[in-house]
Image 1 (cartoon, rainbow, N blue to C red):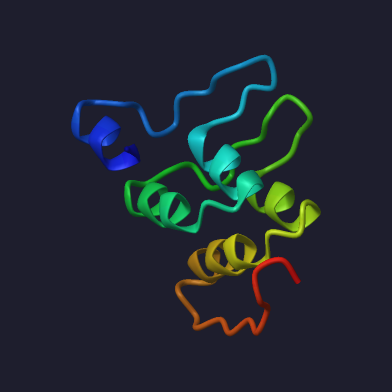
Image 2 (cartoon, rainbow, N blue to C red):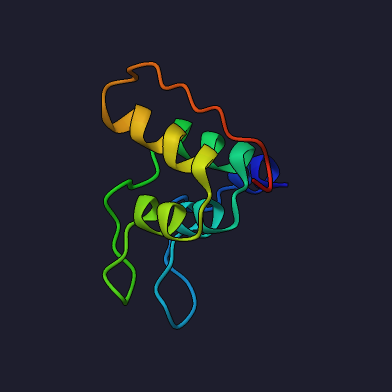
Length: 90
C-alpha cells in the first residue's frame, strides 16, 4: 500500500495528526520494517522531530522496535552493516 501511495504522489515527509509525525516516524514506532525501508529509499527525513521533539529512531528505540532502530542506525552510519540477534516479540 505504501508503494502505491508513493507511486501516486504521496509526500514522503508530509507531517500529519496532532503530533506532527511523518510516515517514517509512524512506521518506526509501529515496527513496520518494510515500510521503513521503503521510506528511507524514498529519502524520508531521518532527522524530523515530531511535536514532542522525537525523531523516528528515538521512537523505534523507546518502544523496543529493535529491527527498525538497527536499520535506521545503519542508514545514518553510511550503511555500515548492523547485526541484531533479536527475535520478534522478545
